[in-house]
Amino acid sequence: MGRIKASVRIDGQDYWALFDCGAINTYIVEDVASCLPTFGLEKPEHIALGGKTHNVTRKCRLTCLVEGYLIDVLARVLKEIGKDEEGRRIEVLIGALAMEEWGIILIPKQKRLDMTHYPKEFIEY
Image (cartoon, rainbow, N blue to C red):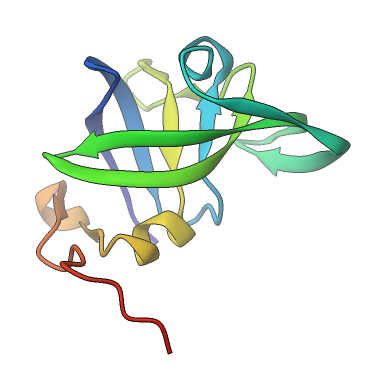
């Protein structure tokens, strides 16, 4: 499994993100999600993330730039995601489903993202 930390741009602001192929879904902290379209859930989702359990009651449409490429995904809103190994607050966690959809590949040895598989067109079968 791999994890890469990088900055993402949301509404003209940079936020600290963790790209984690060990997480299926995408998450965002409340204060960052406050500038995005959010909606409540009929029934809370119970999740375990970062050694803690959370009750997700809202989701949001996250549109951000990753290395200049536009990414648009559904994110679960959490009070806090946690901190990285250096103690920096993680504001967005991009999970495996979003990385697969947008062609984001992790290169852990080089600590970077590979965006060469970013889709130029979407083909539905």
